[in-house]
Image (cartoon, rainbow, N blue to C red; front, side):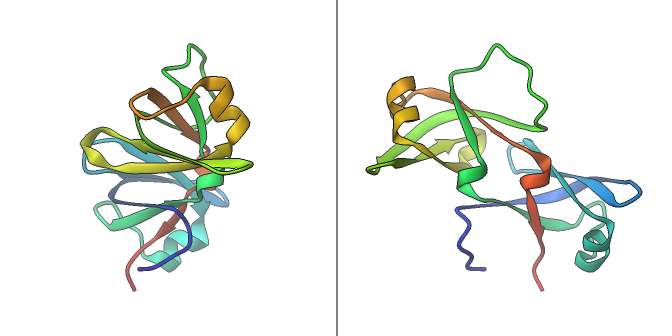
Length: 142
């Protein structure tokens, strides 16, 4: 599957919690990290999602927020992943940062160059990625 989104993480559905309009889907990654997605009930049906289904979590890199180290704050976002910065590709205005999660899964973020500079973010640093469950798109093989 070729898509333009930078992050496509493979996993298995572990839980589906239906609501009136949307469902909360929990997807487990290979190293037991859990991604939470909120999608419409119609999408759950259209994708044929069931507990045990294979699925992909797609997260656009500009929707991933990064913090250096482990923040001492609590966040309302459902998806919080700690990892090690593997690469920082600086542009004139923005930067692409590759964060390696446990198990070798890569998660990429697009943040401003000013943010990279302010945090002093570089390869080898510990960092935390955050993104909202509503920013996760789920996909299955056709």
